[in-house]
Image 1 (cartoon, rainbow, N blue to C red):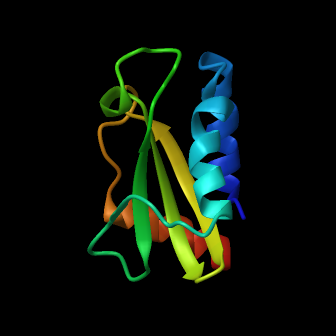
Image 2 (cartoon, rainbow, N blue to C red):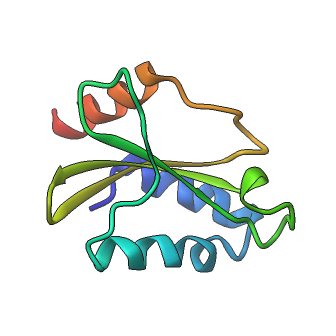
Length: 106
């Protein structure tokens, strides 16, 4: 499942980075296989993880790539909250993550 925020940001990023969908596909495949990867974000009132993905359009490895934030809803269900390019935004606040979650469930 994808939030409206995730869809909107993916569409914006796709205009500048043509290979973004191919770059995040391995992560989506991991989710489909039941593997929840990434680092858990503390300070959020939900089980939220951040995953790094490489940006093939800017060959700097994962550190300069994308960040994909997702929420673990159940052992078989995840919600893709937001995606951003590390070159555009250095980090995302826990308040921003909680706002996205509240907007999604209200």
